[in-house]
Amino acid sequence: MSLTNQYLQKASAMLDTAGQQVDAIQQAAQWFSQTILAGRMVHLFGSGHSRIMVEEMWPRYGSFAGFNPIVELSLSFHNLVVGANGQRQAMFLENVPGLAQRILRNYDLSAQDSALVISSSGCNVVPIEMAELFQQKGIKVVALITKQHAEKSVSKRPDGKKLSDFADLILDTGAPAGDAMVTVPGLDTPVAPGSTVGGAVLVNCIKAEVAGLLTQAGCPPTVLSAANVVGPERAVTLFESAYDEHAHRLAKLYERVGIPSYVSEPQKPVVP
Image (tube, rainbow, N blue to C red; front, side):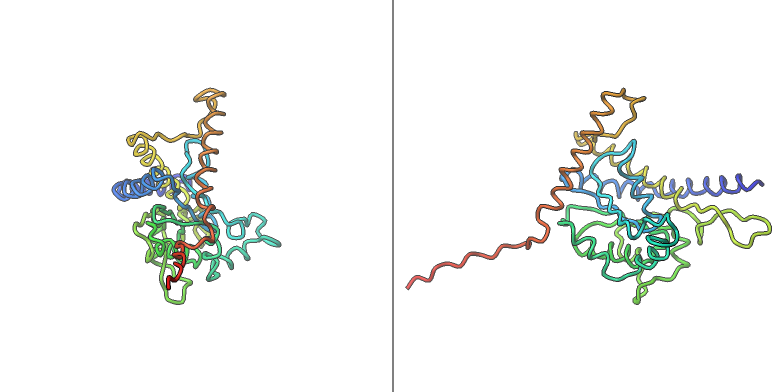
């Protein structure tokens, strides 16, 4: 078997894994559509290369507003590899306790929100704490992990808890432990990771299900669409409308930041 066919065979098996999770995908879509119909947002978070899944959900062609992509550059902008903004710093920072709390301090969260947290190993501190904090706010958390990889990985948290411990629903990319899927003769380490393929499949299945639920509810989404499909004028209109909707939804996450959730009763004058 060629190395290409070896990878394609493994990738095909991941499609089968996704097909075994239809009920879970539809459950995630139910939670996410309820959030969007309530005028709120689905929070998306992933550090390192898990950022790819965040951007796969929104914004790109075939996607729509209702999702809040939390992309922290200090955790995911590592294409310089070494030097300033390098990979070593990003890998260090994604295991700094308390960073998730500082990130979420920027948002006024609501129990109407929902969240998708992505981490192949499910063992890095920041995504684990992110899910934990969401749950503390009554927010439903969907975890996208690689089960085989997560099961054989050790949590970086002192208490040993993983992302799956703070998830209301778990989805599996179907990739193997270590992620890399191709064995090259004469090379003692496998190459060609697969979690991105499996993750992208799951994310887009969720997206399609959410679009279906929103349409059934009489609120069809405004989808970013290519000019060669809908024509140049409508494509521009759809992009502008979708971006405006995103801005309006995002504004709700900012308007009460730092304001206590309760207001003290005014003191009544004492009547002698």
